[in-house]
Structures are given as structure tokens and as C-alpha cells.
Amino acid sequence: MAAETVTRQETLTAAYEAAVAETDPSTFAGGWIDHANNTVVVAVTRPGDAPEQAAGATVREKVVTRSAADLKAVQDKVDAIAARHEAGAGSWYVDSQANVVKVEVEAGGSSPEFLAAVRALGDGVRLSEVPAGPAAIGREINSADEVQASNGIKCSHGFRVKTFDGKWVLLTAGHCIGNAQGKTWIHNGVLMGTSGDWRFDASGDWGIIRYDYNSRQHPEPWVNRYGPSTVQIKGMGRVPGPGSHICKSGRSTKTTCGEVLQHDVSVNYGSPKRVVKHLISTDLCGDSGDSGGPVYNFVTPAPGVVRALGMSVAASRSGVCTLFFQPLDRALAASGTYWADN
Image 1 (cartoon, rainbow, N blue to C red):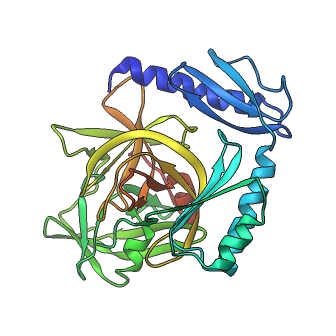
Image 2 (cartoon, one colour):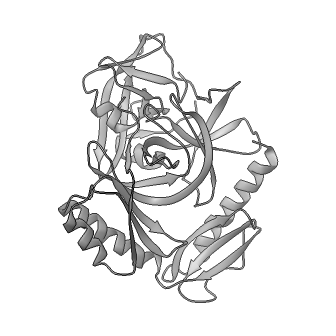
């Protein structure tokens, strides 16, 4: 990725964060990066509430009907409906550009009660049925390398992180660990460690492989991009705003890059069916076995250095590239681990 492109991405990302911070929270309705016009767009319910400039970039205001708080309340209602009725494989999220909550579920997989209750929420919801909903992509030592459990489960290694007692562990997708409880994990035929803590529920999808310090496998701060070279991981960060450039790597579909689509997405996995909240959606491609692999973006001034953002956990089965990932900051907070570069 060219250095000038990375610089432009970071400028727009900084502008997005600054514009959001400067907008009145009571009228803020979301924001995104408009690459075609090299600007940041901020939606508000009252004209004149968005800044005209932020962090050296132009900000364009879009006046809409519903605030971010209004839309979050609608999304919470969809979450509650899904807890009572079968939603089928799918996802729902706040679409700031459309100023609605979009609910996309697999055709024929939802109960009539779920569909009726969602439709009853009114014009703040846009419900659609798609050919196939998302599914976990990992049931089936560098970040993105293949890791395999002793029961045959294959996933991708996410990131090395530290426990508060100073030990390195490997962070991957929770459904990978959940399907290999009590099992050992290997890489290239050599023992890495054993399954540790994990979550695969509404709070998130993350899991830990406890590193065996007698192993000849040593986790390193590099991403295997399945190309001519690896790239160094230097630091972690919050997921940037919609429209920001992002990449993922994994054992099955290797490296794909694209854009952040939405934050705070609730995803109902196809199998097993359960809702995981607070995921990020992207237009990246992913497939079975990529689960747990690193999601990252490039940082300046060195194009060969990346920042850790999260782990791949689910992908669309409808033929359109949509990949969901677990934000790293939430996984660290929930797992009792922290990021360490050294």
C-alpha cells in the first residue's frame, strides 16, 4: 500500500474522529468517510451542528430524521425481539447513511413472530431477506498462520497478547476454542499450547490458546500475508470509522483488503444459531478456516507496519463479500489480557 495512500487514510480517519467529537451528541446521527470526494460526512438532525473542518479535512453535513441515540434504541429493540423469537442467520445494525436500522436475515429461516415484531417497529427499520445469512468461518507463529486443534478444528492465529501475570497467550476466535475445549493446538505439526478461556455469546467471540513455553513454536509480532513478505504488527487501535481502509489475513482466503462498513453490528450465526453483539462489518472476503485471523490497517510512516484491530469471526454465505470481526479492544478487556509490543 503506497505511503501517500496510508497518509491520506490516516488524515481522514483523524478527521472523522475529530468531527464526531465536535458534533452535538444530542443531534449526532453517525458519520462516514467519503473517499470519492476526500471528505468526512457527519449526519445530524439539526442543520449547522456539524463542523465545516476537522483535523485538516473538509466535513460535509447531512441532515436526517433520526439521531444515533434514536437508532440505537431501535437496534436494542431488535436485539430483544431476537432473544424472544427465532431470527434465523442474519445481522442487524445502524446504517447511518440510510438513517435506519437494517435487518438482514436468511430467507425462510426466521419465525413469523420475529418478522412481524420487527416490521411493527415502523419506518426506522428496513427489513430484508437474503439468500444466505452469515456463518462462523473457523470451525473447520505469525498472525494469520493456520492453527489446528487435536480434534481437527482448523482456524487462524490472531494476535499474541499478555496476561496480567506476564505470560504470552494467543488470541483467536471464541467459537474455535469452544469447539476444542480441553484440546491441544499445533502449528506445522508442532505443539503450540492448549485451549483456554473463551466466549461465544452476546458479549463477544474471542478465545485464548495458552502457550506452552516448552514448545518450539514462538509467537511473533508479524502478519503472514501469504505473499512475498510478512508485515510487522506495531501497536493496536480502535476500529476506524465507516469507509476506512482495512485488511484481513487468514489460512483460507489469504489476504483481502477493503473498507469498514458498520460498527456495533449484531450477528446471528448460521450454525450454531446465537447472537453476538458489537461486531464490525466489512466488505472483505472470508471463508471457513479464516476465523480468528488478524484484521488490521496500515500505519505511517512505514508502509510495512500494521496496527492490530481485531479477529475475523463470521462471513456471508450469499456470494457477496461481507466479513464480520471481533474488535480487539473489547476482546482484551473481556479476556483479562493486554497488548504488548515487546
